[in-house]
Image 1 (cartoon, rainbow, N blue to C red):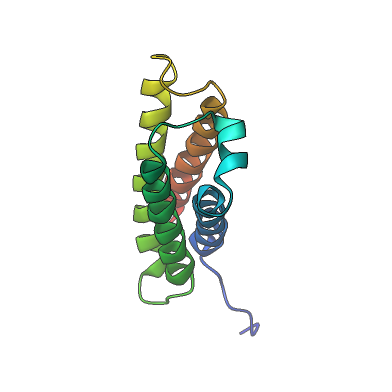
Image 2: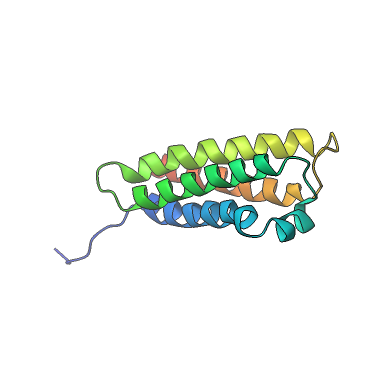
Length: 125
């Protein structure tokens, strides 16, 4: 034995995606003005706060699951895929309708990258 432990690559992705979701969720909660400067003014601040809280919660769950040896990375993958697919759908439906700014296409690209990364990791597992 080499004394090394093999780390599940999904654990690293869970940490990265969880941190991404926590930061993205906290942004409108902590500084709505800068968030709206980038992504456009919103008519319902409560909706931004709700979305931010949910993203933060999902990210924290991913961070906790990343280090859980009892199937945690698989749980983090499910949370990550669900979150990324939902956000991608919103971006792709509402940018063309003009309801949200085209800067959300940057988010769509990131969500596509998370989905691709999680699916590639799932195939290796």
